[in-house]
Image (cartoon, rainbow, N blue to C red):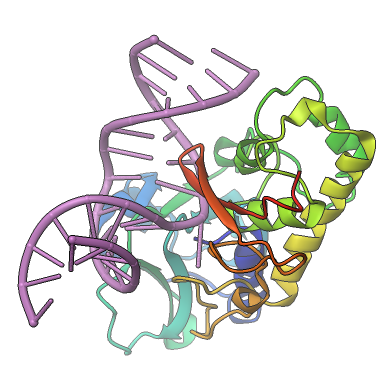
Length: 270
DNA sequence: ACCGGAGCCTGTTAGC
DNA sequence: TGCTAACAGGCTCCGG
């Protein structure tokens, strides 16, 4: 569920609660939530570690801890991170909770149990292989052009490939292609330079809009304080099959590409 | 390189 | 109302 803007919003919201806090214990009722190390080892290694920085890389939350440890969390389809008082009853979808000082807990709510927790010395162990961050300086239209060269895939499937570009998921892929006026089945290596430039601008526009609106609460996403984002009110095509295109009024179509729902305007996306 | 399908999970919604 | 099937924002593995 959470894509780059939702994870970024979560990171920003967690910082005031968590920076300089020290973990005190790990609670868990579903050990497969912990990808690495074992739950037993996590319980041994995490308590006493202080949170020195929190960053986002692609759709991962990265907590830099004291003693050269890094806690990494991926929310996958249905994860939420919440900071609450330890006394508050746990919802049944909370499967991991991290004890903090001052009676608080960082809770990992995860309806579909796809999310994962990692504790590693070297973050690259988890993050290696990710493509460029689309909102950072190095991601220019020229850089995008170079990466598209020789790729024969559909634009939609390529945008979802985390090794091609980091952090774009199904919502923002569809929205980006809409803004760029490009059909999701256009082949990556067949774009004209002006189309590459339009795609570059469109990806950044869609992601920045998502961040400004603090994420899209279309299905399950919530911010750490339990409130909703606002991006769902600004979505042009995603999950709007049959609705009029905001640009030309043609009904939005839905097809399946790479096993994922894909929404676009057949009139103005070519 | 790239595609499709299965798998991981639980819940909601659309359709009959 | 009650059942079933489809669908859900991610990602990995496997075979072709």
